[in-house]
Amino acid sequence: MNKKEKITERFLEQAKSKYDEISSHEEAPYRRFSNILSEVRENFRDDDHFKHVGDVEQAFKTILGNVLEGLIEYALEKELEKVNLKCKKPAKSAMGEDYKKMEDKLSLEIGGTRLLPDADRVVYQEEPFRIIAILSIKKKFRERIAQVGYWTIQLREAGKDIKNIMVTTDENGTFTKHKLKKGVAKAKAIAQAHTNGTFVATEAEIEENGKVKRFDQLINYLKELKK
Image (cartoon, rainbow, N blue to C red; front, side):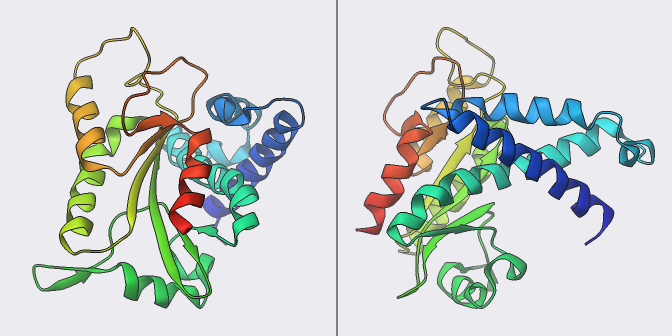
């Protein structure tokens, strides 16, 4: 494990601890993902690791993005394991022997080359092996939506029954009620037409519409897909 992986793991362990603490007394801890990341960042602000990197802000951005992915995996697995589903990073180190099965089921042929869709997590059952969905996870929704739309179309055209889902803490307010920003209409249109669902984890009041829903509905959605 290199230095970056080690400090990411330290961030994540602290984030999980804070999530568990919130879960013990709040019904919707998912609304606090952004707050948790902010608190963890503040706790590590003076860590020696950041005294030896050139661009501190970029270093924090990368680490916190990875921590958010791990924290959402942690939150989902607590519930999904009840119905024998797993939520893992699509990597050999995380999936073990299941990685090859995932690769065979998920890969697409594009331009004569077999490619895996871009995804941060894979939701699947082990026996019999079946991929339920892939998840793209971002703090800011518009950073990834066009890419998610592209892979949703590719999966659809290939006839694969695998859902492509966007999960976001929506820190740029794309779905916040009464908050209009440049580019919102385009992002929302792609979310409705070319994702299988966009799930928003935020304390803000959002515009739930069609495929855009709050994060807590994601768990039931994934459970229903398994049936």
